[in-house]
Image 1: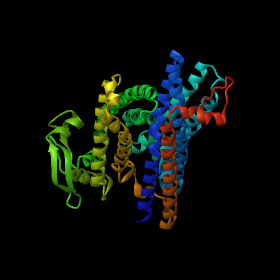
Image 2: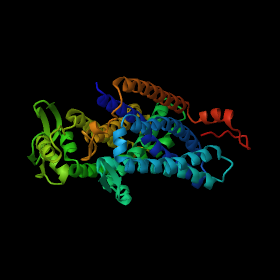
Image 3: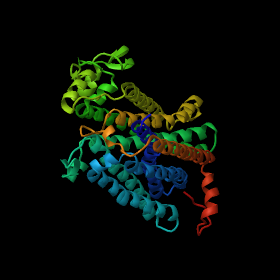
Image 4: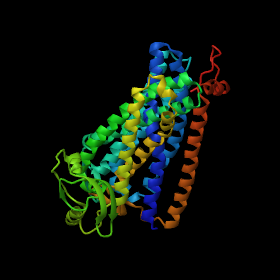
Length: 463
């Protein structure tokens, strides 16, 4: 493997590891804020217990997510210095705003929330967790503004071989962002919903703190349903916009090699990349055309014709991404989404019925379903990034042009192995700590807080 492929692999691994934490942080911050809102509004102590319990799990995930995110930005200087020189004038601005505004805001108010119990008024304390939730999602917004420029470059001019910012407003209102950000936002809501549902179902299955976890389940399943419906709806709109701006990505997602009128949606395909065709495919007639263009007879340009077009536009080269990876990543994402929607509907309909919580098979399925949002998130991101290849900035700079020129393979091997080991340990630690405290139940709140903080009323309260 050369420097380019190793650098790509390293960035892919660190990104996927980091993205294990991000959606849960985005969605769970809002879920905890909603729980505390219910407590402040009703005075019901169970909602306070829920805020403390799920808030503790949020903090574990948040802390480890921050650690993994720091390395992401370092790689732009280490492995992708040519890219940084080319777009640093534009790309660096949203990253700086994210760190200096959103992340600092988030970190400040998360501290006030942790240590402000019984020190701040109820409403002021509630405001701190809402500010944490808002800042977390603002942080994601600025990151996606930067990524949207890579997907759909706007507001720039090429001067002296560099892309320079000429319209900041165009960058922050990028058309790609208008669907990408809601998609990520609702993916976070979905992840948080199924996270709560899964651990609630596990504990109900174990017949431990059943009343507490039934109430948690009822909150979580609402998040899961809203998120599942919204993420699929926004995802559909996003797919249509991507088909306009990056037709090669969507053609690869369907393994559509030849231009077709009324193209079918391939459910399965045996993809032959060497000959540029599918040896075998099972398709639903005309559905791909309808999904992309709301017209059963619409024309979808195939990979082979797009390759010829790009050769004329950008010069001789290989402009086809890894078709099998994009094709199957798309199906894993959509398939996981469909399963989540089905489970969320069942759970929502039966959320107030005793029979649902005595149904062992449903509880088992709900427990296992925690993997579904992680599959959808990871493979959705893989499709987004791999489908853009060979471009690092679509239409302006290829990945090969963006890599650092002075790196050796041994340099990248060392950092690749090191990052992978560290990220694996951190991810294992995250899963271990979350599982440990989630299975202890709400009584773990008092147990841990007693070591850290004693309130004036001698009541243990820990997040």
